[in-house]
Length: 310
Ligand SMILES: [Mn+2]
Image (spheres, rainbow, N blue to C red):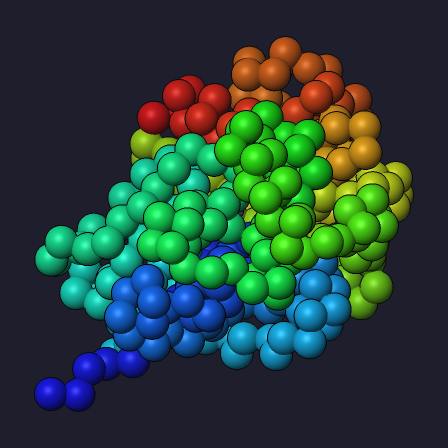
């Protein structure tokens, strides 16, 4: 019997960790799972990811809009609302992730590896080590990029000692000039070249079910938050439209300063305002609440919102 093709896929509005993790799974699929896996993207690839793929001369994965009969290795999420259409309990083949368990289900027992660690790339590193699979230079750079990108160069509270150790081990293979690499990576991440106001919101946007609420949270990580905040009135207008169009109960957006490690939380309505005041105790000043030392949606925003709304 011919086996259905297997894809590796991350969340919608893919970030660097989700794309590179899918690529890593495809590079090692045969050795980890015993079958070939094709990396695909659940949406357009962002400027940061493009920078690394160009640097390593890796072809961009094709964008897949809907899963048909492919089996899927899901990386970097277990949240059903963040996965493209077509994933069923039947075609979910494996999960590799580092988020809270979001609710994916499977018909049969599947390979499932979820760890509270800085990025999915680090989880993949552990799998490769346990299986004594040799890590080549390109793969080492891919994993290092996942770590740097997701932990904001070890500044996010999601960073663990394991991530630091893994980085050290891998840079013996990768031999990157890490200062220069991080600088270029963050410049690419912050680049607004070809980016519309809508893109700023959607680039790293995730939806969550919290109790009976549908909650959207967009994040733009940047070395230059001013470049985003200059467009505040347009962003607020776009957010108000999006909330209506997507039938959201709450919608937040934050420009995250990845140099000073603070966030500018955009407040678009009274509901969002009272919730944000409640959780963060910040002050709304002209539709922006400044949040000191808040950089992680996963650890510093989503659990707090979920607790209030569920
Ligand atoms: Mn991740």
